[in-house]
Amino acid sequence: MELFTNQVLAGIATGAIYACMALAVVMIYQAIDHLNFAQGEMAMFSTFISWQLMQWGVSYWAAFIITLAFSFVAGIAIERILFKPLAKAPVLTNVAGFIALFAIINSSAGLIWDFTIKQYPTPFGSAPFLGSQLISTHQAGMIGVTVLLLLGLYFFFQYTRIGLAMRAAASVPESARLVGINTSWMIALGWGMATAIGSIAGMLIAPVVFLEPNMMGGVLIYGFAAAVLGGLSSPFGAVVGGFLVGVFENLAGTYIPGVGNELKLPIALALIISVLVVKPAGLFGRHIVKRV
Amino acid sequence: MTTLLNVKDLRAYYGQVQALHGLSFSLNEGSLTTLLGANGAGKTTTLRAICNMVRSTGAIEFDGKPLNNRSTENIVRYGIAHVPQGRGTFTNMTVEENLQLGAITRKDSAGIVSDIERMYAHFPVLKQRHTQQAGTLSGGEQQMLAVARALMLRPRLMLLDEPSFGLAPLVVRDLFGILGKINREDKVSILVVEQNAQLALELADQAYVIETGRIVMSGKAKDIANNEEIRKSYLGY
Image 1: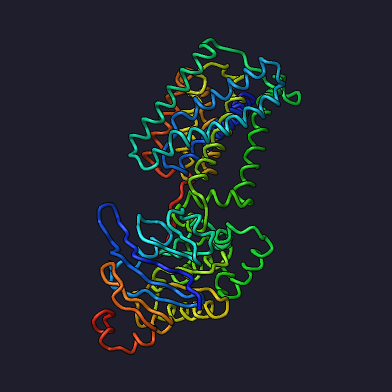
Image 2: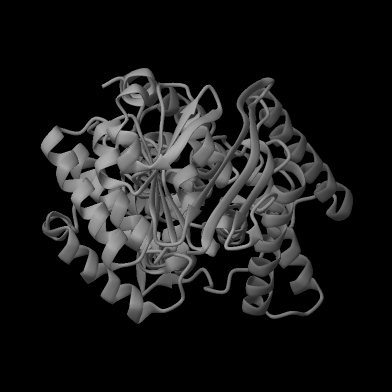
């Protein structure tokens, strides 16, 4: 029983990271109807920035905040430079754009910081959390930061005018422009926020997976699995999906014989395929109710 | 009476296809003007050209200022509220959020709150449903919501694209009554595009008739409604 609780809690902790990645993917998907394959690499690059800052002697939380700001601006810049011109281009052109972005960021990180694995600090420590062997302080910190982030985002989208404008721009762009919303900048803002959210995921998971240019590959696939499971049209679903995938991954690794660590990733892919076959809209995907 | 909207030699294009062929008309401050015409005559295109939602050439002046080359979202800031064809409802948001979105360019939060109450007084059914998803409203209710959303801008000019479309005749009467009231009491100038010529002519003071992208007839709504020849050849009733 303790093994089970332990695995569930650890699953929730990594699930928090998947939830962040899934949320970032869904935010961009809502804005431009494309999956951002480079979301993980963007998060990885941001994490390297924070690591570099700390190497230069900046304290953890200062580096954390600076990295958030950097990621936000970088996300907006990527949208303005690369994806705004592609807005009316066919799907495959956009896919090529994402793959290019993936390759560029991945190799630049390798070029700047090389491919050796680096230690990444945790501000929470890795002692048992509240004296319990079930979960470490870092895992508790991952969950805590994610929950704060999600509450902040909920408040932003539900109760601020700019959040309302962003939702409007994502759901009916033409009407949004007709009430005076600059939809193009709302998309850029969505990119900035998604990139910042991704960087939080990167900085939180780096102490676990270690820092290197390919660190986010697996994480992003779990993020995609979470987004598909929860429904690509639902940010709430993406978050729930993230936690579910985290728990599922751990339990499958523990209890299904022969799965172990090596086969965890195929499980995420199998999950994506099963959801797409059984319930393509995902658990919380919207079937839009409309009367005409 | 001052001219609020002046359109000269408007030509509009969808790709290679030209939809408007040098259309000119004007609208006086405080008036309720209607653009009539058959399907495909260019009524919707005219409204879309005013808001720069379709490629066009020619002069469009609002209150003496040119609107050409301004983006759709900037034109809204002049006080032009456009209720598009199909109502443009934010279907997955609540009724109240739809109203707030109508006022998204305004900065006076106290004014917005009191205007929402004013809209609920105009349209009591919206108050009953203010937390409901807008997509679950009936067609008539959605049209009321669209008009209310446009009014939340405190517009000087409201552009309405076939507000009667898909509504029951009784609902249309109701809606047109409200539009007349808004025009008289709130001093909002209205340009309404309609296929239901009879009703639009009852409501409007000025009327223009479009055929294949050109104005073919203009005058006081009363005169056009009383001229049997025009009615038969252009308006079909």
